Image (cartoon, rainbow, N blue to C red):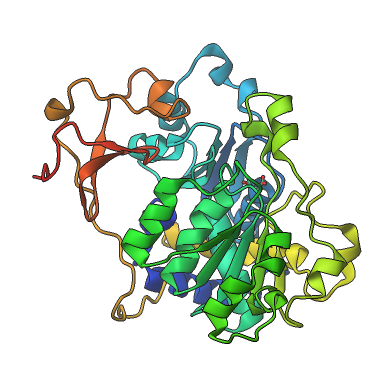
Length: 404
Ligand code: ASP
């Protein structure tokens, strides 16, 4: 069974065909979501959350119960031995004797990879700092597939805090893998990190257009002309090209001070006036919670599907749990040409890395002392290496052509 026993730490962990097969299973699970099933009798899921959550934790727990399994939950890790200084590695090695799978959310980048390395049961990343949130991406892509009838070659705008928003970090790659034309709209200072942009281009030939406000889009007629190939096209047509507009909040908890947060948070609210320029069947999506970037007046608009999007989290997580526990077969079709498939990560010999430390202050390796530096080679680039946990890229101390 293709996915049995696997971890889901990054959106790169599953191939395109595995994602699609999981969605087929989610379609089947959707039919059972009211009555429940008896496929995971006797299995226990542990949700281990070091950060607040509503949708992710509750939908994982509901999904496990709908499958007939049980749940043990740490909703606030400071109430556990973490408060006494217990490490992630020790915590998951305790939990694995009580649970058959662990879903972890933690503020440090790379923390879910540590959990997966130390636990013998499957580990799912429910958000590791600003790094990734792969199950949110699964439900986002599933939402698009359900609402649009397919995933291929769509035009999607990602709006908001693209610097710290982990959902958009995973989603940009998920979309690019299925051939989407991605547009990025973020306030100044909250742009998508350059290393992610480089990776999008390097690995998926995806070069998003970038704007700083929705207003820029409406006035950037040059860009519209480039896209449409027509001198006469109106600027507002760009907004009308999006199949989906995915909005995110500014991630207050990732700023060093409230002043920095307030300065970053300049208005990019989506209102009915803005939506007037969008396609009649465009999707307005949001991972939620919203703060003030989505006006409540939009909730009645048929294009506003963020509550339905959150609801799709249930069948998607039912399918994921059943698949990783090996309780339901996942029928993975043969890969098409150009499909993404995970490749083994080649680690740099640690003896050659001597003093190299991950420069990311929020990387788990800079907080959990037992973790030594581990770096992997970067695909298609010989003079960079990437932290094996948070994926921060750094110049290779071995220089170019260092591989092997
Ligand atoms: N719920 C999502 C997350 O955990 C989005 C957000 O918090 O803004 O990343």
